[in-house]
Image (cartoon, rainbow, N blue to C red; front, side, top):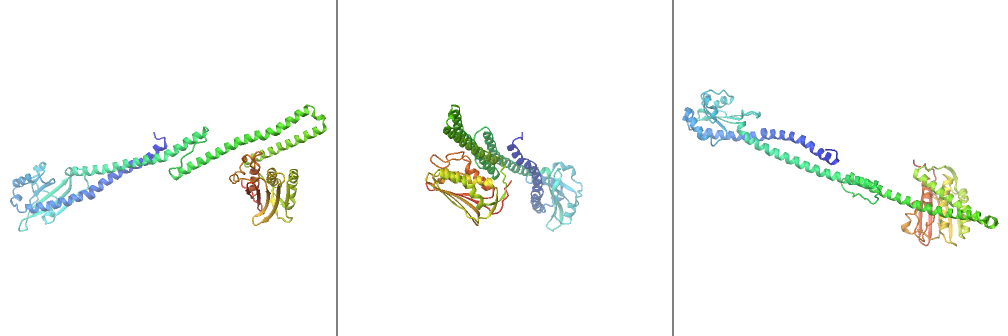
Amino acid sequence: MFRSLRSRLVLSHALPLLVIIPIIGVALTNLIETRVLIPSLSRALMTNAVLLANVTGDETELWVNPAYAEYYLTHLRHDISARVQFINPGGQLLASSDPTEAQLVGITLDFAGVAEARAGQVASYTYFNISSPSEVIDVFVPVLNKNQQLIGILRMSYTYNTLYTEFTRSRYVIVGILAGGLLVGIILGWSLALNLSRPIRQVTQAINELAHGNRQVQVEERGPEEIQLLAQSFNSLNERLSSLEKARRQLLANLVHELGRPLGALRSAIQALAGGAGHDPQLLSDLTTGMDDEAARLQNLLEDLAHLHDQVLGTLELDYQPLAVSDWLPKVLRPWQAAAQDKHLVWQIDIPMDLPEISADPLRLASAVGNLVSNAIKYTHTGGMVSVSAGADEEGLWIRVKDNGSGIADEEQQKVFEPFYRGNQGRRFKQGMGLGLSIARDLVEAHGGRISLDSEPGKGSQFTIYLPLVKVEPTA
């Protein structure tokens, strides 16, 4: 019955009320009856008793003739709900408004109130034990004649049976108020439970839909702060999964594209060799050179995929060594200088001989620089210019690769470092797997550095690597 969160939340609101409200009801009833209702009735009864004593003070026969006293009470009991007793100065009962006390007429009543009334004092007694039909309120008033002589004692009382209607009415009012409060509490608890359970149920349903492949599901971020955070986390997770799914599909498409070209070229060369092309020395040399180039492309592709594997598993490790950048960087750039000259590009380098020594992994850092230079050569038109410079400032050591190629549009500059991203037709980064800049960024960040980009379409691009002068341990 209480397996759902909603029912348990309602129970958590209602159960304390079900326990507390009866306790409050009993305490409130006792408080009102003993502290409010009974004292109020006691004051009213005393006032009525004093008035009646003043009225009967002129009735001398009333206090000596029991028959007349009974006759007097017969007309009085219709107007007064309290019990009235006439007692002579000796303490003997003359008459009572309660017919069941007729046999007590003539008997001496030994009450403390009778003694106080004989002494000329008004006595009032209140008994808080209202669970039996005994007196609850008892008032004794001395009755004096015109000469201020005691001629009798007037006793007026309220018993529990007499006050039952008043007590019952007050209890009904209290029970009604508490029952209304309980109902309001249950309604509020139900409303709060709905406000909590509904967004949780929506998140749960969205998770189930996501598990069944629905990537379009979104959760409305509403409700308490914790529920909003839960919805935000789900939406962020969904966006991340959608991005990963898109990247996976892009990876497969790029693999098919990038593997298809070299494999097709290799197969064509093999078929040509099988058809007798090997008998022509020049053709054999061209085919083997082409096959070597295609095999090199496959090797570069495998290296990119290996680095991607390291990215996913978080296993990128660096072999830190003291690195004299002034000697190391020209050696790294030498193969790329030949590639630029083969494409008839203007090649410029500006590497000071007094660059500070840093702690870095030479091979990994060379891969990052090589990716930037490779892109610059690839996307600069024949006759263009590629320059590489280095220096040191307050930020640390910097290496800058600049070209005057096609440039990168503003809307693409934040995307070029994402894995598998390639620009639109006629734009930069259209060729390849779209991993070069992503790999370069990861390698530089693993060294504790960063890469900045400054580009303008049609005017070229400038990538700058910033490296700290002190060794930064990679985070686990």
